[in-house]
Length: 276
Image 1 (cartoon, helix red, strand yellow):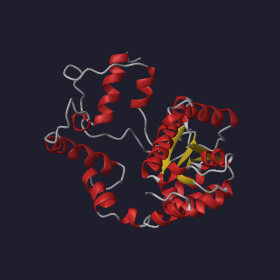
Image 2: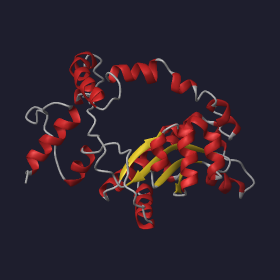
Image 3: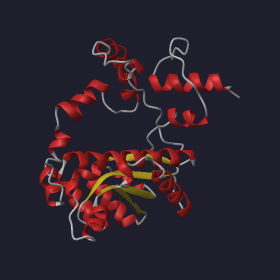
């Protein structure tokens, strides 16, 4: 059985696609870090339900996350009805979602704040400001990531579905979302099928993202030279494309995915987010 150091070396090597020099870059370790570093996307699930206790536990973990000013401006809608999951899968244009035993849709939710304001005959003025929207989005991100960690600690697998925003109006209709809410991201949840051909995805070298005292603009170029062949090997192995830079061009430089969501500026305003 491998000891802790062997496990750490193996997982860090998988996370970065190359041997990790623990001498020059020491990394602490425990069971939680082991769980975090071995995270991977799971798109193939066993035909086995996810019961109430598991969903409740994931939600408790999400509610234990930090929240801006403790306003608690998020909600989550758990979906286990196969017909609704198929509808969500169609919006996402991701067929694998249809086979998930559960989908959690994380919602930026200002409706409760507005309800409280209305008890004194007022409106929540802060909704008109972009910073409020940013706080809502951040709350969703923090809470949903707590949920992912909790789910994985229970043996479940997950994959985020930003594609629910392909048609936020349709998702809102499916889930009966009220005014002043935004379906931000879905999360398919289930028991990982061990036959799935997948593994830990290598990330950019640590020096690319960890800066000391000031942002180091010179770090990225050399790090990208190291990372590109590592990412290319992984992407080709799993038929995900040619490399990380190709993915950046496809998803960010070209902008096709985001053009499909251009409707959201007006839709957010119609939902009550004036974005001043």
